[in-house]
Figure 1 (cartoon, rainbow, N blue to C red):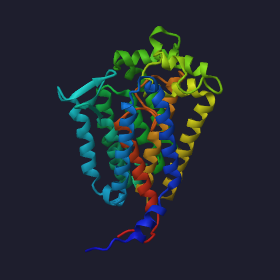
Figure 2: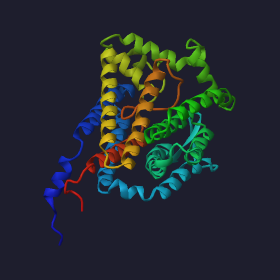
Figure 3: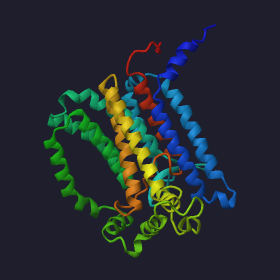
Figure 4: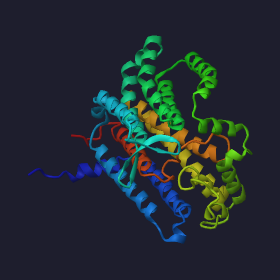
Length: 373
């Protein structure tokens, strides 16, 4: 019978990045309290969404523990399989009768009472796969043919997301890709040409957008439009909160159902109304601390593959945070991008924690500590 090495396990636990863990846990707990108000659980006594959120966090924690058992380098060896799985998880949604349409996008698979958003899983598997592909080509990143190959690998995912159509998640993937390529040494000249090309293509892309997406873009330039109801109610909620807010469970926009999608897309408006500027600044500071911590871990990685992984995850969390907060105050177009660890959603919570698990994996293996078999 194999003897359990308790000393080794203790060394592993001590070597984890507890600062990052504490930041993520704090954001989640804060979000859980706000979610109890956004779902009116305090009035109805229905805590089902809270229970599901906690369950998702528990499952995500188990995923983290499992991921820590494997060296991320050994996971990276299966990057081709991860790429194929990522691709299939998006393709399956296009099969008639499989994909479920919600909020204008065919992005979900309904499994009993549970809605699985496959793109959330793909964010995780794609980052692990694409980071390895970039790592294998990092020495020739300035070569046009190599760069073209890297774009070809990424294009199917952007195309499949736009086909759903889910522009918000497609932009998330673009940010992941850009952060990784920039870290790999993409020249400023190429970056400038990409930006110019994107600016030229934007009007053409607009022509192919779904009607509801076009309305959201136009509303960005005309915030007082009647079609901009969501953002108008959100800004009223945030503006009425003042510095200290109306108090938890006391926001009229929230409690009287004027604020739409308040448990996920517009949960930041609930924070603004009920906890005021102080509450909003607390959330923003916590996310800044999390992103800063992620960048530190990226620098300390034992190899470039680990760096690319963490940078990709940082790009994902950074954009999602800016996009979600930005749309609630009318600075960004409305999309279905949620606020990490705060918005309601089992798929989002579990996969976000899986990404944190890989980051912890990279940090744990930054140097030899005598904790690996």
